[in-house]
Length: 562
Image 1 (cartoon, rainbow, N blue to C red):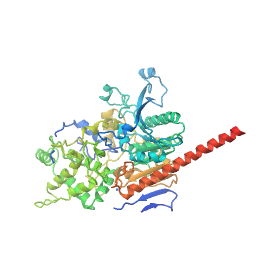
Image 2: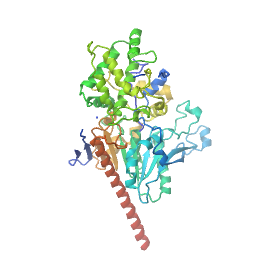
Image 3: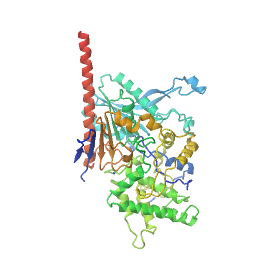
Image 4: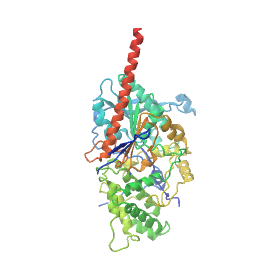
């Protein structure tokens, strides 16, 4: 979402703190299992320690690629809709100025792409997440590639506060806190989308259905839109949506799930268990060979990892490398892609395989378990992410953002994380993953959120507001939850259900919501089949909505005839 998303740069220890179709017929649920066939380095300014700490809590759900030329944006009309700052307050603007809540209005942006729209056809609505909506417009191929078949009206809605849909002044943007960001949350965003759909329905009164689409945090929003506003949207495609990532679930959320997911992606990338073992050996060597007081060792790390500036702690390097590995796992696509890099450079096809190949290089002159060759291998592995442009002269260790464009919305998502999207997911180490030993520390997270945003996290808020498993099992309908098994987020998504009105699509060789992306000849069979199954469900929802509309018309005709 979402990222979005999404979500966290799994910071195990902060600097300041020591992965044929099987359609189940034996169960009442509709579970679909798809199985596939088969440098020179530019100096950057070093961010402050506090800014680095904020980024480590930035959205790991997604970083969207934006092409230099907006190929699809030019085919659409940019529009604006007036929205209240708060849909859940009845105060006037004057009352807010006197200390009340929620007065005032602002404009949110959306794009309408109508070239394929025909009467009695659906509206495809992308529920925008934590970025400029143009990014989603340019990348959501599932909507574009099926628009003509359905004669659909494509609408891409921008999430409040992100992109150009911000109510904040320039001064506010320099000071992100609970006062400037108090109306930034998923509930208000969903209400924005509901208001937008109402306006669209008035303009396109012949539209037969509204189908929500979203990936990552946007996938969470799409599913929640269907569950909270079932009278507004007729169905939802929720790709890579980790809606079970919150406290209050039964069984409880596993804080180690994301790290285990990244490790699985490494394990199936060509060298089996040896790849994640090499990675963990490198982290062990990195952390156990010295600490922040060992200046000689820190100088060795600076040289080994080609750092632009002095290294403050081995953990600084470890978290920087871990961030890259997590994003590479999410972006383990079958084609070259700039999706995780905001278009500034590209990751190679199947990038985790490239990582594993780098980790398997042995130094013939040393024991690999104790040699700096392990650390050099780790540096080369993560450089495909941090030096994707092949232009970096050195690395800004401690800064998990590969370029400035990926930093633009991190404070916004940081606030959402610290208020409503509080996900316990930073346990690492031991036998279950390829990182170093570190446990989730809620107390430290609370302290960070108070220091950074002056807010107190509410760990149970998302589960209590949106219902979690109980909502999915007992009340949800017309939702497809798709999860790529290569995506580290999949263990926090909907993988099982007994609800026959919810369809699950598990994509063996799918990374982070690449079923939403434009199709490629290199797509694995599992990804291709996932898209076909999603289109089949969309067709069913549209047919049902069209049949209901016909029944209402006939009933009204009979009533008039009498």
